[in-house]
Image 1 (spheres, rainbow, N blue to C red):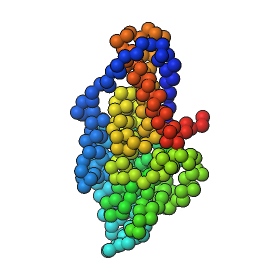
Image 2: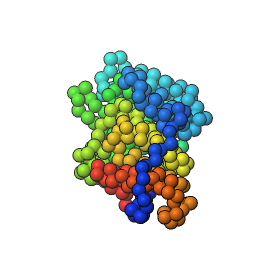
Image 3: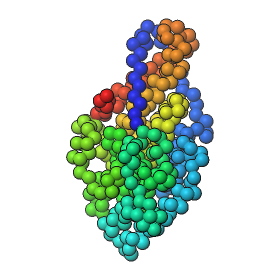
Image 4: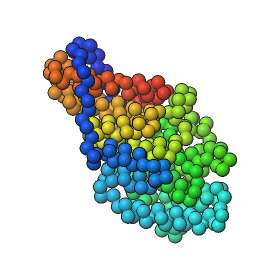
Length: 316
């Protein structure tokens, strides 16, 4: 699920300095601009399902949005019916779990389950909600997305929270107490200690809010856009991935995952623009050196900023 590339530009000091060149401007229909437009909507207009569909279309324009909307509407309606009239949050949660994880007419007798063949969503397509709805096999990206959309639509106070290479649901009960809901395990409550034991993270990463923090609704949608960033990185569309990362970080400045991916995209852009063409940095034309320096410095900064938040590079 991760691609981590550092470019240690030790040769920077060997090259004459100059003003950094600005990154190319992003067109109105670019992934970054579409994501930005989605995230800058008024709070009352933010919608998890609409955002998910918009982001998935950036990855696969052939995404069957109608099928996704129809299935979600059916599941939401069934969940409301199972919760009963004037339900408590407890009944709503129980109904959400049943609608998703128990086979019945509401899900066409096809319950949703954990994809043990690709639990981390290594294949980008497997992270899409549309794929989860079609195959009924999900991972730690698509499974919390479905749960989040249904739970939100029936009135539960739910957002995303993050752990290393993992998303889960943070539910806040009517008394203001937060609960971790693990959607890869039936949507049941999981202790913070469980996440720390199974997904090691530093104390600093928790203190800084890089992990285990309840995201706001706008931050949650920004976090959902990281799949688009990963897709662009996978397609070697490095500048577009950088632009999307900047949009995400503008909303979630403590997102260490996005910082690292931005650093990887910057390294890829360096490779394409300079390293493949000029094996020796001294051969870079003077007019291009400011751009080279800017990319190299930004690459180093991305990893430095993530490490300052407590991020650690995964063991190989």
